[in-house]
Image (tube, rainbow, N blue to C red; front, side, top):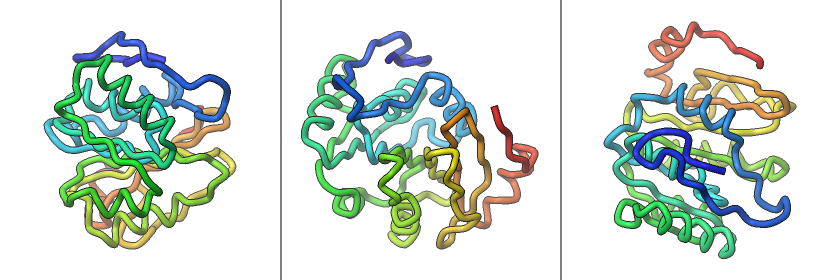
Length: 197
């Protein structure tokens, strides 16, 4: 597991042994950041189910100014802290331990990019996205990236957020949500179509 590009390019990240934590693959990670390029640079990102810190550190490497890392498991957050130290970006990071509802309550408004990669079987993505919208944590043109199993179809709209892009990579899918008023521009720029790889 490594940082793909940016200021931290090539840094190897530590992973937990076994399959308790499922880091996002390089292929899917590259696809995610290609889709959201330009939305979070010099801004704030949140890696809400951080696991290893893989997605949040990639965001930092690619230009995010500050990243919040959150996870309910102490073991995962300790690992994320070690990866942050290894990358030398501690001053740009905030680590929060607890269930996602609790950690969302501690994140200030003005987030440009939410990265959501919870355990696929947890079934919490809709509730999480709805809470992000209800708390008005996103900036006007902010995005929510939800990684989930390809067999799960998320709603076209959740609260005031609309699905603007969906991509499938084998057994993994990525759905991106934006504020309803931002949907037309984002969908038009992307061709407004779903793709499968």
